[in-house]
Length: 217
Image (cartoon, rainbow, N blue to C red):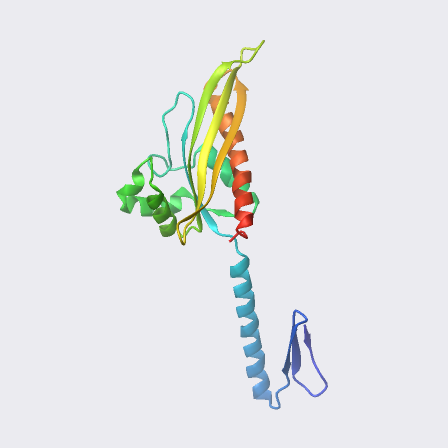
């Protein structure tokens, strides 16, 4: 809060805790002090924003749907998989920024090691670092079909995801996850995709909880 006393100048009260008496005697000094205070406040706001900003996350979850080959955007595709897309939506809703494959395309093109479907933990961390991510979510998502649903022409479909959350700055694994989902559909590929989406929602919830324990930073 800024107040203007009778003797000229002004007082700057920040958060009710710190009071700065800015009552210079000369007009020039007033201008200098005012500009200094504005710069000081700007620095405080910038530091506060940086401290509260949530980290970027890169998703590296290889996916295999029913009757389909394993796929991964960093190896053969340009888009996130169904699993990654569902996880991304949930994390974005919670304020996290997801690194888009297009923004990492140049990095991958320059390093052929990132073209492997099965990235090592070290390679995942390196890709995350080069992409300026705070965290990496690395894992695999696999869908499978079961038997027919009783008294129905639909087939049971299941999906399982194993993943881990890695903090990029020190390479520490923060959490390991297991997530699952199911669906029933006449078409197993569509059913598999639905099961993967359901498992991804379960995974995203667990990732969010783990990041919240980290303080979201």
